[in-house]
Length: 263
Image (cartoon, rainbow, N blue to C red; front, side):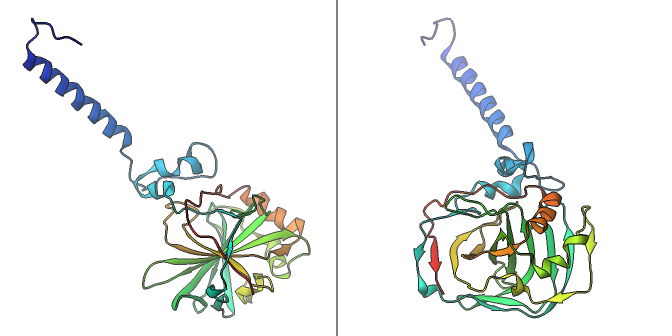
């Protein structure tokens, strides 16, 4: 573009500077995110997983490189990982419908260990269908047992896949009275050992990842058990009817190691 002799160079510079400033101002405004106070997220629509990172300031990690869940395939055997180390105590439960999942809160006293660090079991909850997939195939359901290291804030989560089969005796005590409304809590006084919901063989897949819900913090040491447990089709349907689909789509590994320990 040629500059007309009638339009001084200084004015051209000032005009260009003004346009650039306005452009940058608009661009900044478009990328600014609100506080997460009161922000709602969902598994569908404009507040669904594809939009989580854009909803508010604390959810931007949902667009990170170490996200969960992932597809489990081509895992590298590594028996140096060692057997799953857990110390679970008999506990009473409170079952809460938090609007996103059915969450079983446990009493203090149960824990697991990774690399010499202790992680306290806080709760376990359900996803229908499974979040982690095996060779791109999903399971109808998945349990997540959430543990926290109080010193570091890191989490360790054990994922347990569910297949349709024989009825599960523990779940049978709950399935007829699942809390139907958000915020509703069920306390039936029953107690059990959390590993009741583990398969007999505790071979597992291991990788480093994140929470599967906002804020998607990348602080999770994952142990996904290789073998599934069974619930009856009716038991699975009871969770599905209440939760519908509360599973985040699988995320890319992005160079992360996916390891397998075989018992």
